Image (cartoon, rainbow, N blue to C red; front, side, top):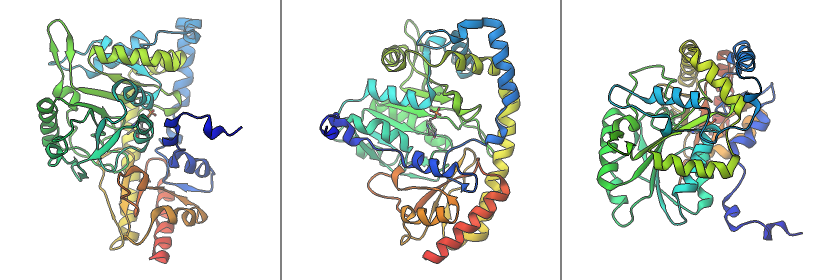
Amino acid sequence: MNWNQCFARRTTQMKRSAVREILKVTSRPDIISFAGGLPAADLFPIPQVQAAVEAVFKRVGGQSLQYAETEGLAGLREWIARRLSSPHLSVHPENVLVTSGAQQALDLIGRVMLDAGDRVLVENPTYLALLSAWRPLGVEFVSAGSDQSGMRLDGLDELVLNKRPKLLYLVPNFQNPQGTTLSRSRRHELVAWLKANNVVAVEDDPYGQLRYDGESLPSLFELDAAIEPGTGLESQVIRVGSFSKILMPGLRVGWVAAARPVIEKLVQAKQAADLHTGSLNQYIVWELVQNGFLEEFVPLLCRTYRQRRDVMIASLQRHFSGLATWTQPQGGMFLLMTLPPEINATHLLPHALEQKVAFVPGEEFHLNGEGASTLRLNFSNARPEAIESGIARLAALVKRHH
Ligand code: PMP
């Protein structure tokens, strides 16, 4: 059988994620990995999860193992809606859909909003798995670029002149892969621009609570959303969140918050995709969050990751001064390093793996073939001593190739 003739045309746009392929190698214990977006496994709260499972079985028994509503566990939706509410904005559980990770929310949004030929505005570079999710839909990605303050807005008007974009996608806090954050003034400017141009934005924010310096900034969703009489919450911003980075990714629990017509369409798409997110996993998350676990756990994550970020930046200063530049993240898990233009990060990777250090080449996060000399470095997963020796090994390697 020639299987290539059997697959749908859209599959020609699909390929394995470079990140997930590198992760297969980097799970070996002798490798120092700056590759995945992995939380620190040594911090996973195993006893608390065990206690939560027992509490759930005691309280609801087999219901936690049964089929459940597509929309998500009512109590968890309420908790998320309360978290998103403020004195000026009351978000209703009907504005929330629980998804199998934020990744599923992004996939479903693409399926219900985008047709082939639609234009999508993104940062450059942007989240690789968003490109993978939406590329097979046949959309055209365009970018006005980004800098230290996140997505650049000065070129947007020009980009919409001859063709209105269908969606704008961005990661406003501690972006993947750059670690940069959209400034407060740009948030206000962007919300006004969305309104003026009638464009919907997808605000993907899995890292927002992992802030190590500076003040926390309002989400685009809260700046934009308003309660309208009759229709309830209206917003041109669709907000996507996740428990992956603030609890654990293996449970695959994320969420999306939006105006009700959007949630209704996403529910229809989710019914076809997987019926609902795992019941027991939702119960575990709900048990943990309603008992206030995040209030102690997120500060612990922030303390640990802040120290690891500081160790990485100090090591970079020691070993890469004058040789490379890097972004200065105020939170999250990543920074993006730029090597001299003659060094190709994809070509460097096999040599780095021989030296037992791993990273993700930045090129695939970029549009238009840019970013060949960039690499994404994760600082949350490796221990401080390993970060220092990993950066030293990388610097020795780069100096040899320079
Ligand atoms: N969005 C961004 C920007 C991410 O970095 C990630 C995880 N790497 C996701 C979404 C997906 O997260 P989840 O584990 O919740 O599916």
